[in-house]
Image (cartoon, rainbow, N blue to C red):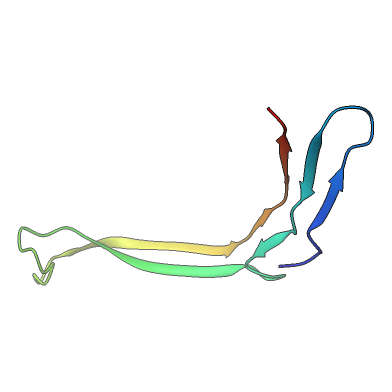
Length: 74
């Protein structure tokens, strides 16, 4: 998480609050690597000899969330 939460109350005649939210970054500079087995089996434990159907491999996953929250009087 980076940046302050800023609260700015408007002064143009309308009552409202604009809250600038901090930036949330997921995965850092290099990103996140995710590897998972994909299994199919008639047994609930997915423990059969042929249960593995494949592998999911995601490399360098990154995300960034920014935004603001606006609240007005009603």
